Image: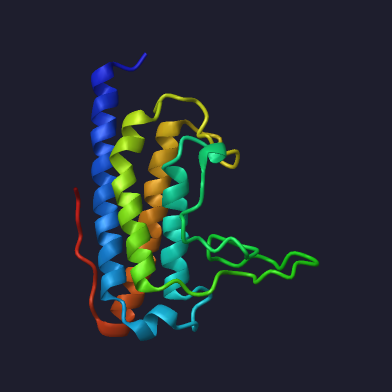
Length: 175
């Protein structure tokens, strides 16, 4: 069995890395110009990457898929609520992806997610052998590490767009 102090240490580390990652992500959003926010020269516009990232941070801070309730401003009348388009669903009359979210909306969503971190991490059974999401066959602890990696992956993606556009990088935050 894992000693209780090891779990407490893991919780502190997870919370620290979530908060630092979300702070770096926030900097990317704040630094983004309105023009770049909506620019669609990439497969996914800046706003799409930002929303997609937070959609999954929010989801994965839930105990399991059954507990997940989308953010209050989530556009549910679309084929792909997470902001990234997949193949069009046959016969669907719904839009493929949401209409662009504003920077203000995304910053509100980010604050909500950041405010959820501590309580979620404190209440998770990190030794639970199932992540709570059927597409991940790993422990709850590993699932949270995967979620942070996903957040950092897209933070780096947006940071690179910012650097290519205006030469500004993101501030590294360790914890």
